Each structure stands twice: as C-alpha cells, then as structure tokens.
Length: 201
Ligand SMILES: CC(C)(COP(=O)(O)OP(=O)(O)OC[C@H]1O[C@@H](n2cnc3c(N)ncnc32)[C@H](O)[C@@H]1OP(=O)(O)O)[C@@H](O)C(=O)NCCC(=O)NCCS
Image (cartoon, rainbow, N blue to C red; front, side):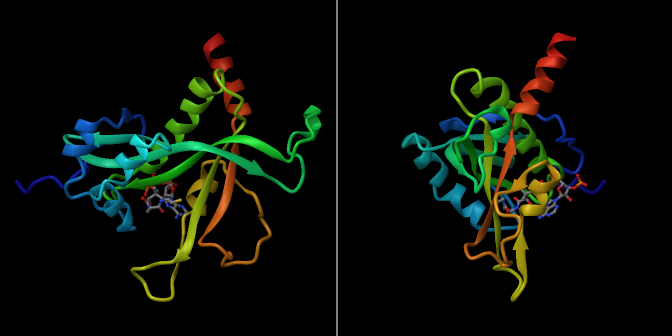
C-alpha cells in the first residue's frame, strides 16, 4: 500500500489547539510546508520563540502525529476606525481595545487547519480574555502583496478572513493597498453572547 500523505486523513475542524511549549518548539516543524515559505522560516529561525520569550506574543499550534499543521500568534492591539463603532451603545471612542492575530500559518496539506486556528482564537478571546480585560475586537493585518512565488500575481489572504466574519477597516481603499496588507476586524460581542446562550441552555 502506498504511504498515506501527511494530514490526508485528519479532520482539523475540531482538532485540539495547544499552547506552544519550548519542547514542542524544538521538536515540531520538520517538513512544515506553507504556501508562503517565510512562515516556515520564521518557525525554523526561532522568531516565534524569541517573541514568546520577550512576552510580545503568544503562540498556539495544531499538530498531528508529531507534525506541525499550523500555528497562530496573538498579541494586544488597538483598532482605529473613522467612526465610533459603538455609538449605538453610547460609547463614542473611535479607538477600541483589541487582540490581534500576529502570525497565522497552515501547512498546505492540512485542510481546515487555518480555519480551525482562527475559530479557536475567536472563542479563546471570547471565553478567556473578555472576562479579564476590556477587549471588544479581534484584528488582523491580512496579507495583500505580490506573491513571491508567482511573478506579478497578488497574494490576498483577506478573503480567508472575510469568510470567517472579519470586516475591512477601510472597505473602499484602492487596491492594491499602500501597505502590503489590509486591516480587518471581528466584533467579539455577538460571539460572547452566543456562547453564553449555549452555556445557559
Ligand atoms: C491563510 C491560511 C492560514 C489559510 O489556512 P488554510 O488551512 O489554507 O485554510 P482552510 O483550509 O482552513 O480554509 C478555510 C476556507 O477559506 C478558504 N480560503 C483559504 N485561503 C483563502 C484566501 N486567500 N481567499 C479566500 N478564501 C480562502 C478555503 O478555500 C476554505 O473555504 P471552505 O471553508 O469553503 O472550504 C493559509 O493559506 C496560509 O498559511 N497561508 C500563508 C500564510 C498567510 O497568508 N497567513 C495569513 C497572513 S495574514
């Protein structure tokens, strides 16, 4: 029988997400294949561990049978919008406390791992962070840049986040954007309320 390809038989939709430990950082990552190669390089060259040690981000991973399927980092952020987003709730600030997805990468063979990591992060923020610190939104700077692997073709990660319910901070910005990304945000409050309702029923 031919060997089964890595991750071919894994359902990542509810897969366990684990906190990165020094032991996992040292042992995982062999053969990690992301469609943007720099995310493999970040891992191999120790960027994630350095940022953890500096307390500037926290990393969680999905692994299967000793192989890294994906990772996500979270850090604090502030969301700045043209109009106060919570005016209807009597809050007039244009700047809002947020938690940010810093790095997100999935092995291209691990279908569903990216979605799982983001959905997990949203639930983690709603359940674990919201009760402890004022935080209303999750943000991300979604890559929108020239694909290093295809000359003249833009790589756009924003569609991935849009499918998961993120909105654009500047939906009308001319494309390609001035920076190499588009900032997006997700309102945690409806998720918090839905989770509370589920817990109560
Ligand atoms: C972005 C990334 C994490 C998505 O992870 P993934 O495991 O490929 O995504 P999933 O398999 O969970 O896909 C979830 C859905 O999003 C869709 N999707 C994935 N990338 C997409 C994109 N760039 N635009 C629109 N939709 C996208 C998938 O087709 C899938 O749709 P479905 O639910 O209808 O089947 C992964 O492609 C990656 O590591 N990319 C390189 C690094 C990167 O861009 N990181 C984000 C930087 S902000």
